[in-house]
Amino acid sequence: MSKEILLKKIPKEILEVVKTLNQAGFKAHPVGGCVRDLILNQEPKDWDIATDALPEEIQKIFFDYRKSEPQKQSTIYENNFGTVGLKTDSLKDSLKLIEITTFRIESDYSDSRHPEKIKFAKTLEEDLARRDFTINAMALEIKNEKDKNKKENEEIKIIDIFGGLDDLKNKIIKTVGNSQDRFGEDALRMMRAVRFLSQLNDYSGGARSSSWTIEETTQKAIRDNAYLLGKISKERIRDEFSKTIMSDGAEQGVRALQNLGLMKYIIPELIEGIGVAQNKHHIYTVWEHNVLALGYAVSKKYSFEIRLASLLHDVGKPRTKNGEGANSTFYQHEYVGAKMTKKILEDLKFSKEVVEKVVHLVRYHLFYYNVGEVTEAGVRRFLARVGPENVDDLLKVREADRIGSGVPKAFPYKLRHLLFMIDKVKRDPISPKMLKINGNDLIKNLSLEPGPKVGHILNALLEIVIEDPLKNKKEILEKESKALNKLSIKELENLRKKAENAKEEFEVSAEKEIKKKHKV
Image 1: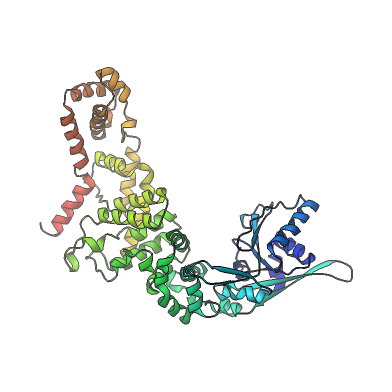
Image 2 (image 1 turned 120 degrees about the horizontal axis):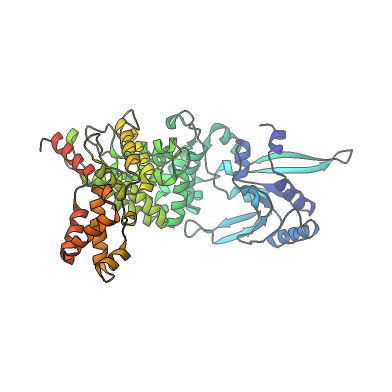
């Protein structure tokens, strides 16, 4: 990319900030990831400017600037580690907050994450030397000069002290200076190396056609220092892992986390599947199958929760394996996997909403459906169990599961027929709220006191209606409720337990198929 084109890609807001600092007698340089992205012809996600102005000087400069031209920028100040946040009125998210940071030197990383000492530096070179990777340690020098006609012209120069341009060209991720020192200072940088590997690769030709690599010395330093990840907060690990999962190269990223010895400090349960062979329905080990399922979810641009569920859907298999060879089994691995997934995600401090969604998808990913074997009542029970709002996502996880098993079709006729059946019964009642009678009706008609018996009767009525939706009429339900009211609380509880513990038709059919296969 020519310097003229590079200059044109810098937003006017950034040029204005640099010019304002320069006119006040200070140096100012766009620096870090925004420079890397510009050179790669990508849209920067945020903008950082490094300067030799002290924080209080930056504040004064932009306070005065705001007074002179209030329509252009409004400012708030956030002095944290020498950083001043400058708010603009830009419509672009990446430009709404521009961070201006005084050149600095960091030292004494006692917790392998945060520097104990921060000292303001005098030169840009000193500031760049503290950064993580060479591709993030470049800066731009923008000069604003007037020609003979007093017209302002801008010129740009790339400042590259540590070989970042060559590493960009050769697609290499390498630390600035000594790799052992960089990871000893901040252990999270090891995960950042993998995240950049995942984000920067071009996967247009498939995951295995990627070309970015982590330099060998940097790889060795990651393996040597992987244990330091145990000192990092789970929230920080979660954030870096999430960015990796949401990148186009998530599959390669997960493989790299394992190959570099980091995964055991993130999700050690996943690596239990390494080398664990499956049965004749799978050509891959449990580990390989899970990673390939993630790769499929990524290729389809599926949501974060679906990607996580695809990666974790069979995490319970190693702990439930019985037997070896083509006929080995993994009974109830979806139950075990759901419990493991809950612990994994809670340990990583994911939100309650993410945990509940992913656990639900893992728990119900293994459903069996065969055309002609499952009745409409069975489909209604399936919907009641998984929730109509989760069906699309559940089927996407099922697609990823199938492709991760090495089968050619992600969505076979059976699943298409299931969608047809779901569409057919989707308006039928599957919850007590959809009944033509409610708790208040029961209390009034049966002279009941509010309490558990009302709920038990409603659940029993729902079972009747799931079997035959035509019975969802007020007069029919009133008659049925009178009969149910004659039962004791214990008898009603037994009905509820019977319904809860009954084998669903999907699972009954699956069990029959398994028993037939093993001649049980």
